[in-house]
Length: 361
Image (cartoon, rainbow, N blue to C red; front, side):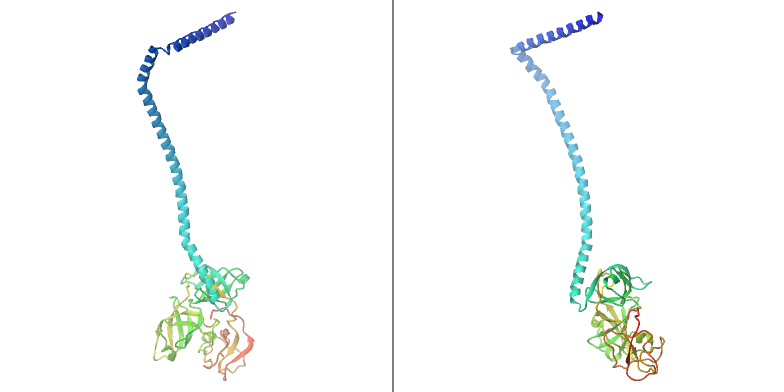
């Protein structure tokens, strides 16, 4: 009973409030059209106007600040993206010089391949050992799988001699530089006709020895020196005799004459050669693969009592070859196996073929 009574009372209050609001609303609607209502409305607008203006300004200011903060955050994000893009572009720009050099080197080496009168294979240098504590060598990215073999001659983009292949693996090869002290090549200066044995040196310069005094007197500083591709008279030691014939093709540029040592009391003279090849900074090189050079038939020098093809131990004294003797270009004597003391008559060539020797002469 009490619950029902309370519910009825609540309903009556709601209806009473609704009725009162309805009466007030109707009354206000009736009064809104009167002059008094217009005056009151005007007064209220005047009183509330500054507050409304302030609130609107405050809202606009807050909106501006929020928009600025949003814009700043967006600009910060874009700035970070631009920084990353700038870093990437700068790295690419820094690589462009190296890429341009590679492209330029490749263009030069392909052009050089067309100008070399031999079949060549382009290779790229992957390891460079030019310290003064070991042999001066380069390692290139091709080997026996690509048709390379020991003894093949290597030139740079200018056609200048770089060296010879010393060791060959399946996929890489080691090139002994012409500037290494153990490297030997026979060269000639065409203008004077001077011919001599050229050795490398620790300084990087090449030393040209055993130059005839008459020819040396005609040599000029700055003149080019090329590979001779021909035999020289045997010297008094087996090593010089072994290197009498150059396994290098004739006509390859070695370098230019830097200085000449002229001793009037000496039978032979010497000179210093500046290498023409870019030994320290070449990226691509050419390997001559179709030249049949290197150590060929055994050459027996005059003064030997042995039959053709016989040999003596290294260092046999008194061995020599008559100045007019020669061997076909590309063939070479075997170290320690060609100059035999005591024989006479012109040099003969043994029909036997000497085993391959890996030293770079």
